[in-house]
Structures are given as structure tokens and as C-alpha cells.
Image 1 (tube, rainbow, N blue to C red):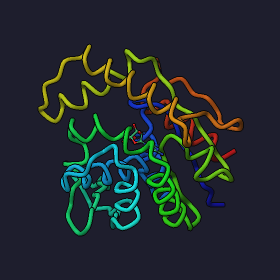
Image 2 (cartoon, helix red, strand yellow):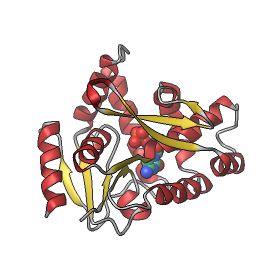
Image 3 (cartoon, helix red, strand yellow):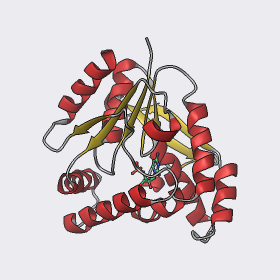
Image 4 (cartoon, rainbow, N blue to C red):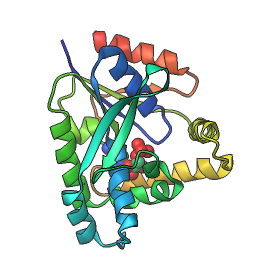
Length: 224
Ligand code: C5P
């Protein structure tokens, strides 16, 4: 039986890596909800919008066209491409500028309303894995499997640092860890749909687990 799997957690907890792998193994669709808030943020920056202007951001979120597409990447692994108003912005949405502004944009009620509607529409099929901050609590409250991934801030900082390093981007580990802490604090203390573990979600601390171990635990939970 195909099910909906909701994976939430703070930045760098391994959500997207795990969600992608699970979707690949079960042949489910993968929806990266964070990529959608990033797309709105990128577009707002490109348009030179005032990020304090909630009305403008809300209008943008309701009119923006976001498509999540899969292309065959290296080694045959499917690769997520994020198309924003017809342009492939997959790399641009991961920039440091977008990363440092996305939480402010994602805290706007009107932006969340538009994205949650879009996310539910995209998930309107069986066999879906969605990752984010409010998937188990708000977007897919009826998901058959909900997992909340965590890891220590130091470990999450290290993972992000390695990820950027692999892309040839040099960053300062302490600064990166601090940035992650700040983003999590902001995401978990905002008024609308804060980062929260759903009461029926399974908590999994991945600090000392390998990616393969986390994938295996989730696969067995899904098959229960
Ligand atoms: O997952 P990712 O780090 O790409 O998410 C970027 C930002 O988007 C988060 O820090 C958060 O502010 C916002 N977000 C959210 N709700 C989600 C997914 C992401 O508010 N479901």
C-alpha cells in the first residue's frame, strides 16, 4: 500500500537526503517544501521587493509558478530541478543570500497559505515523501508515517560545511553553525506554523547515525 511520509526537522538534520533516498527506493514522489519557500525568496530578491512588506510577498506567493521536476543526474540518481516562472533556479535558490533571507519570507502568513495549498496539491497522489518544518503538523496531518529528524547543532553545521565544501564553496564552520542555530530559532518561534514535532511523529536523533542507517530505520518504519 502506498502511503504519505512526512519528514520534519531543523536545518541540516538530513531531511532532504533521507527523503530523496526513501522516495527513490519506494518509487514515490519527493516534495522539497523548503525549495518552494526558497523560490519565493529568490524571486522577491530578484524583484527588489521589501522583505518586510507582507502584502507584496503574499501577492508574489500567490502568483509565482513553481515546478519541481526530476532529471536523470550523475550516476542515474534522479536530480531535483526547481523551475521558477519558467527558469531553472535550482542552484540560485541555494545561495547564501537566499538562505539568510528565507526564514523571514517563510514567516509571512500569506506566503505560507499559498505554499501549503500548493504542497497539498502536489501531494494529491499516493506514494509521497515530503520534507519541511510543518509537514506532519499542518501540510499533511493525515500522513501515515511522520518522522522528526534532529541532530546536534555542531553535527548539522559540520554536514552543511561538508556539503558546501563538496561544491567547492569555502565557508567558516563556526559561522555556518551559528547561522543554522539562528535559522532554527527563528523557524521554531515564528507565529505561523512554527517548526514543531507532531505529537504522533517518531523522533530520530541522527547525530551518530550514518545516512544508510537512517534510511534503513525509516524504511522499516514505513513497511510496518
Ligand atoms: O529545508 P530548507 O533549509 O531548504 O528550508 C529553508 C527555509 O524554508 C527554512 O529555514 C524555513 O524558514 C522555511 N521552511 C518552512 N516550512 C517548510 C519548509 C521550509 O518554513 N515546510
